[in-house]
Image 1: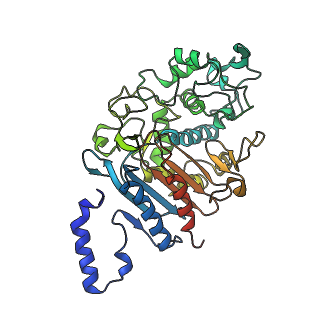
Image 2: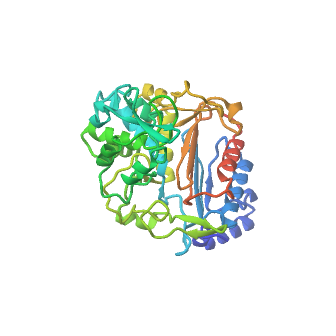
Image 3: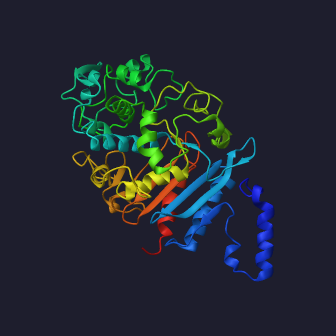
Length: 429
């Protein structure tokens, strides 16, 4: 039996004995002690199917440990933790475990941009150069028979282009990859850098981008650039701004760029798969190891992939969005900003799989074309450490799923199965 059971085994056995002797309802006896399900419009059978399926990934050593949370109508409907936070030290995972959320940081930064627009400190249709002057003249790498040419951009990149990933800025692996490599700007990970993000972005502007602005969806450093925009427009460091405008009003007390030392024992270890065996990632400060989230220089605030968080914190952020910008009486964004955030901003580009992209989220635009169980207008995304989330506007349901494995392997179908079982557990509205 996995580690989540061990701290509670004695109490569980006593509870089972008590229920048996008193004739209490036996339906309670089969529930996993690591999960909690309240009475909502999620079926008992559906929740049991979900619990059993997630347990299998840990029991079969395909994942080290999992935390999942479902909110229905703003209330916790399912809270689940199973497996190990750290397999080597035999420390169980808990719903309070802290995870590297990587690209799940992007939605939070995007919300920050819209908050600044509400405050009159920026406009999303304005050129990025309004806030970062080095972006006034950018270039694009264009393929030729002998390699590539560098040509001027046909127009300036706008803040909205960054929000919708249509600026043409990738992760440094396009035609001009050698130039990005020489500048030491490639990949999504920034935690080991002693250079502030503002300076990295300043250097980034001089490198050739992948496509002309507004012509294609290119996933890359867009949100890291937005982090620099926030610093310039607000006059605050990115971490201080997020704490003041988002984390504090939402009660997101465990969301950080770098972990406070007194929370170190709550950070989930990263694992990888070697020869189909689950193996602890090395204790290195790079993207393929444990990272520099505790002992690093704590200098680079990566809006694109740098945050740490818990399931509870991230679910609170998503519920705020579903609520139209407020949570527990605290308004973080206006309903109009949320409406813009959840609208498809790339409809003019080719889209054949039922998805679009808003200002920070993927948006489901066609349920049939998407294929898997979903709902129209669902927002979601994931992170490089194999975390995932989505939120259904139609069903007022938030699903947050955390584990820590990099890179994910073909053996894993947990995201698809979670989606099917979570939607399958719905019974009524």
